[in-house]
Amino acid sequence: MRQKRIALINDFTGFGRCSVTIELPILSALKIQVCPLPTAILSVHTGFENYFLDDFTDRMPAYIDSWERNRLMFDAVATGFLGSVDQIEIVKRFIERSNDSQIMIDPVMGDDGKIYASYTRQMCVEMRSLLSTADLVTPNLTEACELLGIHYPADGVISDSKLATLAGNIAAQTRGRRVVITGVNLDFDDGSSLANFVYDKGKINLVMVDRIGSDRSGTGDAFFAVLAGNLLNGIDLVDAVRKSARFVSRCIEYAEALELPWNHGLPFEEFLTTLD
Image (cartoon, rainbow, N blue to C red; front, side):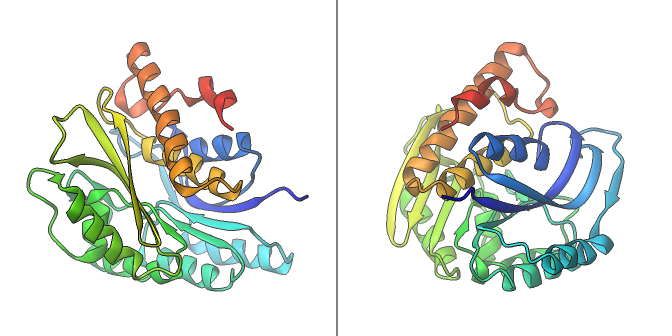
């Protein structure tokens, strides 16, 4: 028996409960050894008016080289926010040398039909090149459309049949053929629910959750961490998505009760002991 180990490639943000600062404790609670590779260091996330950012691009190759010289191996490599074309290329080379690792890609590019201001057109194109390395991809609807180079639906609402086509087209470009499109508004719903669309090597499932409150920072990171940890622990993809959705829903409900500002993220600390 051996503890599972994951290389977690994402930014490190001091305040706001997002990226590494929410993913690391969740994965640790799921008994996964977490080895962060920072893409940037931020004082607070960019949802705050004033933030300090230290781009880590120039230091990433030496950081990775140290891992390789020490012959470190990882059961999985998980990617989150990547801040430049150079970073995408660095990560791609690292993944290509991690042949025995599960590759889990969260293409953090945008939301609500808009690509983040920090993302250039070239970065979007380069992000697509990571798909061929992936065992699992977890875009939201905005990112799924961008990965395929198609228009986001004007009202942000989509049918499950169109989702199946989107997920299938993304999966066809990956090595694992597993895609989860997260937080989707479906056309048959009255707006009271959100769907997570699961595509697993041709098999499809919908995991529905109640819509609670408004959007909050770090929600996607929390979802991804629970999902990645459960997959590494041998849980079926659909069941792992259900666990992720339930955990995030509990956190959002408590955040609403506490009346936390959206950019303060999820009070996930209260629920770490509920993870299994």
